[in-house]
Image (cartoon, rainbow, N blue to C red; front, side):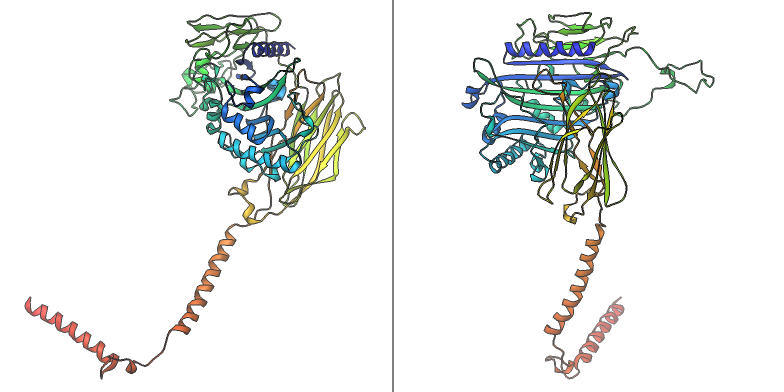
Length: 587
């Protein structure tokens, strides 16, 4: 509950700062168990709708704005994610999962069009343009990877003509997120990673995290007086291992410490000079921003409004007794409270900023908010023809039932049997499925789209299972690493009850699936090609010789002389002998 109140306060800071300025940025740090640290970066800018239509860009990135205008996109949500969120140890997801994506790349957008064909054409224009902007493979999101969700993604923005909007959703679970995607992401920011909290974003640290996600969200926001603005929100969330992040760059490979530098438990019977059992430390580890990210925070971004009283940029959520040192030459403001345990600071302008937390033995622990649901999903069965999918969803609340929407987007070569779909709750014989939307796949044209609205009682576990059939692909449709398997997109869960406090909603995603398919022996085509080429070469050579070559006697050839061919050969041999004999006499 304490962490939940702290998160509400942090969201209030962001909302108040965004309302008073056109650009704001915030960083939230939250220590996690097992020496982990959650760092949430948030960048938000507002642009007038009139200025946007006139292409008079100020804080809104021009490159992204022109793409949205050309593709007729009114609302955009783009995600780059890697890793798995450990809900059992880390608690509730940042931003209630609203700024989190599935493994790889996930994209959904509201496109304005007269019909579905026009909307899909603009969707392809959008994916191809974003592919070039973010150096990603978004152009591979074609009809087979695109669905049209019905219940899972309500619009976050305020739209004037919702009847002409079409929602399209696509995923690339096999996409590898790397520095090539981070660099365009930073270029969209006003300070472009040179100042402000974005100066901490380094590819070596971000992609070494246990879990990380980058999000870009664009939505229209209208006030009560009718004035509308286009809001752009960029977020980066990462879970860092403190000990691993503090490793110096000259030691890129983790190596064990020498035994004399390890604190050993001498009470063990086998403890000796060359044998050590490390002591498990119960104290909070020491860390600093410069130690974790390898650089100091380069002051405040000059484009942010630091005059507001609520313009706190860096916040850390720790127990009140945690000691924090601030190393900076500029001025800062601090806000502490025993209720929410949130301390926020203002960044100096033109000076470095650093937070230092020494190692400390704590008497109180930071209480992490409990997630509303736990979800896991995996593939069962064996063989090359059939299999089954099992999703286990647990409601940890002992008092409240949870209503949610379960979305699955499956590739066309993974064909589910809907008549085998079963949903069972351990404590209730009632069927938890309230509504079903199913759109079957068409080979090489579209994938399977399945949405279920379900209710899970309090303190219960819901098990969802169905069987599927594996299709056989053409050998040209297999990727180079075909024996690895094919990735299936994660399932998306959107909570309907309890409702979110804002339009972002509450989401959680399962891990992606690795689907093994029947894989042919790719050496056989080469064997067939080589054998066929050999047979053709032999046959063609013989036929060509029979058609072109002319057989004649040796005595019929002109210029042979009376001796014929034998006489010519005999003459050349005698001349060679005479030459060798002459050389021997002269020597």
